[in-house]
Image (cartoon, rainbow, N blue to C red; front, side, top):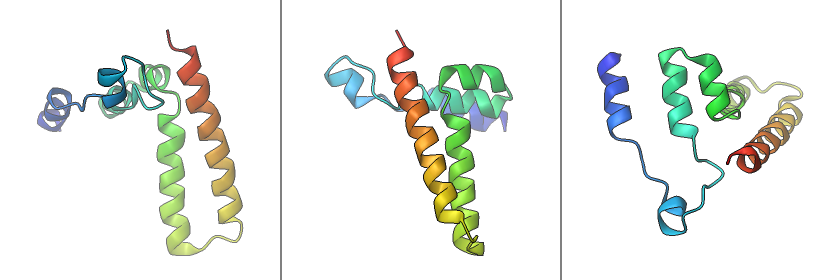
Length: 96
């Protein structure tokens, strides 16, 4: 696992928006937050990119819903989407 984390850390993708325009995008911080989460730093991960954990939960729920067809699954996914959108936008404007 340690070699996997080292591989990911040494091969982070560069943000094209930040490189071309010099401005952070809505996803800036996602990769670093994911690495922190894998390392077990839950609080640091959340502070780096607050929407990561809800996004992962949403995709997990989506996959489960596609297999099991929950009765109100589509509505729950809409709430997840709204929550994640709000978190991403707040995070974008809150970063320096």
